[in-house]
Structures are given as C-alpha cells and as structure tokens.
Length: 117
Image 1 (cartoon, rainbow, N blue to C red):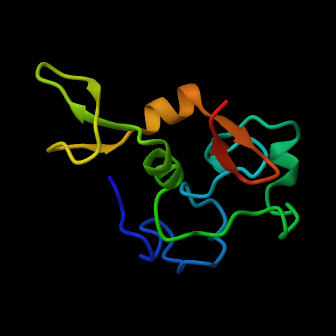
Image 2: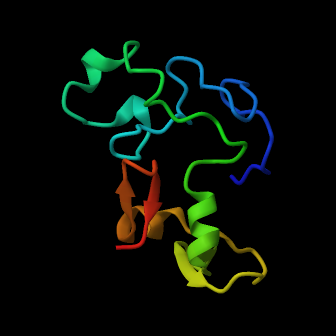
C-alpha cells in the first residue's frame, strides 16, 4: 500500500513531522532501518520507550522506504501467476519496490535513510 506524501500515518494517526505513537508498526528503527517494533538491534527491548528523542525518525507523510525507491528508480509490478517483477517507472500497476530496497540498499544510520552501496 502506498500512501501519498503528507498524509497522517495510517496506523497511529500522527501528522507529517511528528513522532509515531509508541508501538506503531510504521516507525523505523533509526539504527537499522527496519520496523522498530520488530528489529533486533542490541538492547532494542531495553531502549523501547527510552530511546533518545533525537534518534527517533518522525513520520514524513509516506511509508518508509518509498522515497528511496523513487530516487533509485526501483519499481515492481505483479506478474501473472504470482510474485513480482522489476519494471520501469510509469508502467501500469507499478509500485515502489521495497523488497529490492531491503535486499540491495544499505541503511545509513547517520543519514537515517537507505543508500545505494
């Protein structure tokens, strides 16, 4: 599901620029880039609720990773018979290829975003 930029988070309702509510599945871990609620960063369980506010990533109005996919030109569309296939931007049925992002990009904790290796 792709949300349009500047929409409130579809899970916890915060507006763009605000921090997610505790436990929101849309919040990214600032240390590894995956969902905060499911990451395996060292001592992540101990940090939950006590993570420095400056480290947290505010909601930017769209799903995590889609901006990077657009920047890298990584899109996919459903293929007949199931699964996904890479495609070019603008093709009918295309969406940002988050699977490729997680497989090929690298999380930069300083920039708090995915980058190409």
